[in-house]
Amino acid sequence: MEKKTVFSGIQASGSLHLGNYLGAIRNWAAMQYDYNNYFCVVDLHTITVPQDPSTLREKIREVAGLLFAAGINEENSVVFIQSEVKAHSELAWILNCMTPMGWLQRMTQFKEKSEKQKEEVSVGLFDYPVLQAADILLYDTQMVPVGEDQRQHVELSRDIAQRFNYRYGQVFTLPEAYIPPHGGRVMGLSNPDKKMSKSEDKQEDSISLLDSPDNIRNKIKKATTDSLKDIRFDEKRPGINNLLTIYQLLTGKTQEEIENNFAGSSYKDLKEQLAEVIIEDLRPLQDRYFELTGEKRYLDEMLQRGAERAGEQAERKIDHVHKSIGLR
Ligand code: AMP
Ligand code: TRP
Image (cartoon, rainbow, N blue to C red):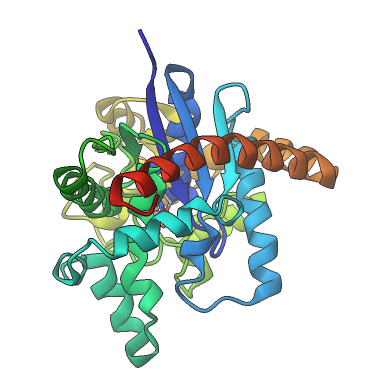
């Protein structure tokens, strides 16, 4: 049976954190053997909000390096940088011309992000979901593994594809979001009412995948809990619930086992054990990261091969699109 095609993207803003890892890239690495995969560092999405050029340049490579370090490999997956495959911008433009403004006005992520930026909001930020649709549709993607926050964008991609196909014939495959049953929403450490995010100004809210052991211990130590004592999974207690959820995702134990383990323990015990679990889980990833970025050319060459492979498929698709709408 032919393998299904998977596409997902990750931005190059800030540092990759535990939410990105548990909600996205760890799953991408684990599922890559069963699918045809494209994993893309979406640098054109990143510039929808202001970026410092030299930091951006560094972050693009850092994120790409971390994808490989997390176990995504060239045998099973195409890893590439979005701006190196020109068809993404080109298809985004074409889809722009067919997407009603009203559809974009409904996007909750735009509403949230634009509130922070006020009148500085760019047209690009508004258009962000259309570029994302282009990413997905260029590869005949069937499955899009993402965190919960991206469900609406994937549904929009599907709507855009459907509308296009209705007008111009069967050109695009309709994609579906795949949200992992657990880990789809890791919350912030200092503010467990909000998801852990890259753009959070407060550094201690998230664990970066490249944080040192001491840094991890400190951040977990300071994580918000509550004034109760017992250690139980309980969504009404977001701080403790989040720490336990992270512990569960990393150890693979059941909720019951974990609650039994920590019966009678203090929050301090839980935090100390959690910190060690995180440190041990990230250690091999960090080792691989420093190994593969030690030799600059190595990563560059992998990314170049990735862009070539992605480019071939994307060019075929854009050609089909051009023909179907009458540009050729
Ligand atoms: P981004 O950092 O926005 O580029 O997101 C990259 C991937 O990580 C997407 O699939 C997101 O849905 C996922 N993601 C981001 N933040 C979290 C979080 N706090 N919990 C779970 N998944 C997340
Ligand atoms: N918007 C996604 C995020 O912030 C990143 C992204 C861009 C993406 N293009 C994509 C995810 C295509 C999945 C498929 O997480």
